[in-house]
Length: 342
Ligand code: NCD
Image 1 (cartoon, rainbow, N blue to C red):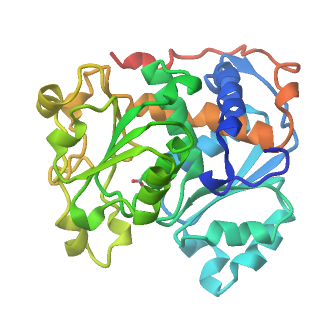
Image 2: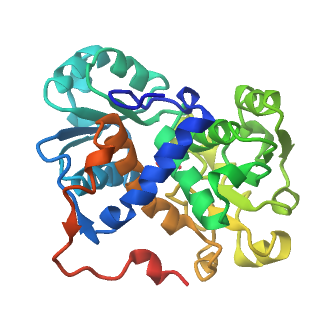
């Protein structure tokens, strides 16, 4: 696809060949993302970062990615602080914000709302999560993480064995990641969840019709036994009618170190889009996993910056300019946060 001027709304818009430039540019962004080098390639450009649902990582990493390219960021958070509470339509808001910014990131609680927003604008829109729908940039950073952590190049991702665990019904990250991995060949998916929170049929069918193996189970130990990557998720409590409804599913798929060492492959990579629910009744990934190098969740979150930088550089058409105007960062930098991991 031609990225320049494009929206990034769904992983459905990608073919396998589109993933190579994204990952390649993300790799080139690493020294800038980590603050070792500085570039001003997006100097003068403005990002409108509109978040109408809670977010920490996605909102900040989109903003940081834009800043690291030299651009400026305007954030809005929470529906209650926006004119959506005054009855403004998505289309009107889109028209208005398009007049202020050169690129827009939006997270919205309604599935499909981000695409609706994109229809009324003349600047690129990136989907930061639309309700239980999709989270395409998370899927791309997850792909980048799988590539880095397993040591498999994108060409070698065929045959990957991945277990996705938890709330697969409402978890938008696993919908997008499954559809993205379905672009490869012979992937073995194991979906581990309570039957009420299973992966949507449409997503399972997508994987099956492309010839992948799909197993569905409610047994965590059996489900993770053969996986190279274990991708855990949070019960998406905000998508349930009330907390009693969601509470009944909490804690069913808690992965502790003892359980991991007993049931998983030695080198298995543990991922989670974060936030992990660390309350005792949920405890999706126990803190005792922190000491294991297998726990990739913080490196995964850090990967959000180079991947989102790559997307901005691609949609704003500056990929070839980034290094030309770059230099060493002159300021003190603490060691990489991922160096804190074992
Ligand atoms: C996820 C999301 O918002 O979909 N978080 C994220 O973007 N890293 C997962 C979640 O909230 O459980």
